[in-house]
Image (cartoon, rainbow, N blue to C red; front, side, top):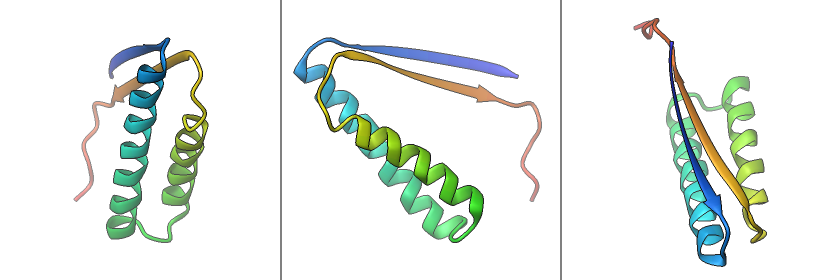
Length: 79
């Protein structure tokens, strides 16, 4: 398994706005993909709820850190 991590320090209103835009875009993308691929499934609802929570938290401009972790598993998708 490979692991990739990136952190973004938020120490200004501009940084806060950028973090909010990143999370809004991620939420919108996952929402659209879930509609077309996994609509109505429990895992899609849980995933969307998690990103909705992140998006909503970023609406309030504060200092902090946004960390994105991507873990890539060795197994492939089932076709």
